Image 1 (cartoon, rainbow, N blue to C red):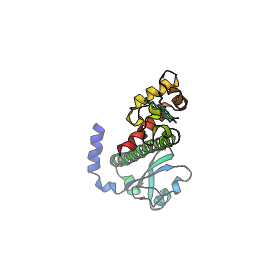
Image 2 (image 1 turned 90 degrees about the horizontal axis):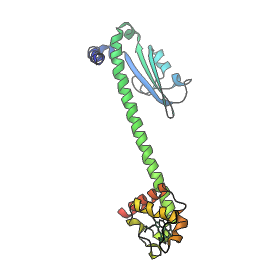
Image 3 (image 1 turned 90 degrees about the vertical axis):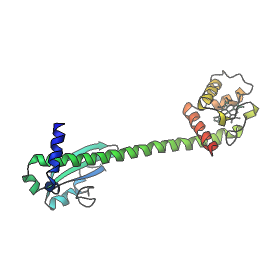
Image 4 (image 1 turned 135 degrees about the vertical axis):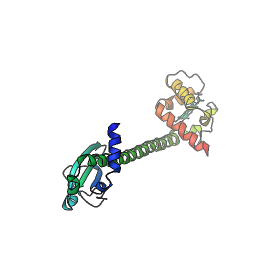
Length: 210
Ligand code: HEC
């Protein structure tokens, strides 16, 4: 707490120093060997300059943070000019902490967005699978929209909750259903699992909502 306040004060009072410190980063980079010749994002690198370019312009590397990501490594470079090096090091820490927090927040945000997109993609894929499964294996008896009473003995699937479906399918599987056409459905019940029933239920709900 005390340190945070100190950093803030130092940050406010060190505006002149800010221009001499910059922070550049690169996400999901594969190789340590090539990073120094890869254009970095953010700060004064701005997607144009590599660490080596920055060095040639008189900047030096003050700190490097590397973190592992799903598809590579993320690099954060703290760069400073010679003039910063002569200034008090606590000034520098104030700026660095602030910039680092900003970049970290940005990276976190991006990760969240990517993860959300992944979950949405999975839902979309399972909906596609459910649609294909239902169309190929179920709709002849249960109707295109799940509206038919199969062999005049089943309830329309579109009206069933996922729990209803699961319960009926389970009973066919274990031979507990003693309805007159149970044997017809039993062979189909045997090759679908709970996840597929969930998917088919969601699919039928989605096409009947329109
Ligand atoms: C050859 C026709 C046929 C096919 C194909 C078929 N079913 Fe059925 N299904 C039936 C019949 C007939 C019943 C009612 C059986 C009875 O009398 O209990 C039934 C019952 C059901 C029930 C229970 C309904 C209730 O009232 O509780 C569910 C759930 C169900 N089917 C899902 C499916 C799914 C999912 C598929 C595709 C994987 C499928 N069925 C494929 C004929 C079929």
